Length: 532
Image (cartoon, rainbow, N blue to C red; front, side, top):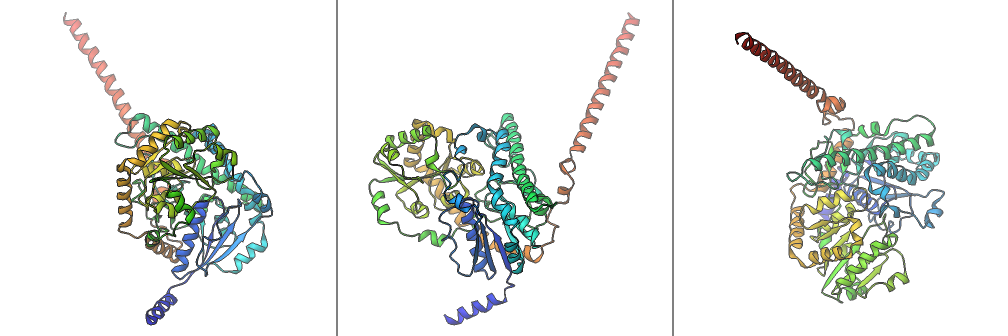
């Protein structure tokens, strides 16, 4: 036993240990949780890891996310942190039903500025804080790993002169893979309101182009606004965010080829979805407290409801709440556990006895319990991954961002349904949908089949991540896996000039043929007239 332990420690010592800074902005809980688990995976593999956490919101429950004591955590609290602690509106209640957010054109204009504005103050203060910058420089990091939803980490790496590896805790929101050679995903990944091939018709394809174009605009504008804010904070011209991102040999995405849509990709796009899932641990989750055991014992069936940390249930429009109340009343033989972030005695009085409001819920333990038959979720990637790896049916109610994509992605496997947030107000439709999913065994069977597939995928996501990360750190300037045509511009990349050339040749040939036929017809008709 001791010999094996000593041998393991000896082998670890021979690993080319790197000094790694991971930039982990505190904004959305699922993002923070993913990055924290990523840090543990890297540290457990023998590398020195520093987790740098600037706070954009006063997000609770983040202190216990990192279990590895060898990881150094640097929390960066901005000067206005006390405001964040006492802010009633730390998130975006307008995302529930604001028409500006729900319409692609207006959303691309509004959301990009809104999100960038929420990040501006902390990002500005951080990049002007020479004390912190010098402290980070002094640690002589080999590489910075930075998420790309909030691009300050790319500039932090540039300023302290350390190579940067970008990563996205979501599947593809924001969709930046094209910067590293990924072809267009139109027709491959489902767009809101469209059917997928082969059922897709002309209107679906038209909608695909419309949705994809403005989502791309939202992506670029969100990052560009941050770029402009950062440049203003530094007070001098900086490289464009796209050029900084292109400098990496890989781009890490929290996607999984057996869960996600099948999309064209390149070796630069590293799919690591599922690497944070510990199947052994999931089979031995923490036991539920006596309080939850009592709640689940009330009825044979239970449903868990949670809309995540960025969008809060208590800020839900009242007509949506009325629809949920009708659901609860219609299914009196089902217990509902609803993550509701605010103590509200008056609202509690409106609810039937089969509903339990909780400010926080032990989500993994509840999803692992057989008495919980359905998960009603916003479709954040953290929740999507968790429910996929528990074989539990899910009613996906996407609110914004990557959630519509996540909902369609999971629904296509048959164990989930993508449900419009606006239909929460329709209590009858909601009740019928939930009733079908709770009592119809087909959803459970499909969800368990997907879980079986994910549990037996041929390439372990964790090993895939580590090998690509160490490759990128060893060969930071390697670019041969990026398609050369990707650097040629849109026209050359998709051969639009050649297509236009052949179209013009075809049109000219058709026109000349038509003119020749007309002249021939006149000649023939003239000869007939002379003969007559």
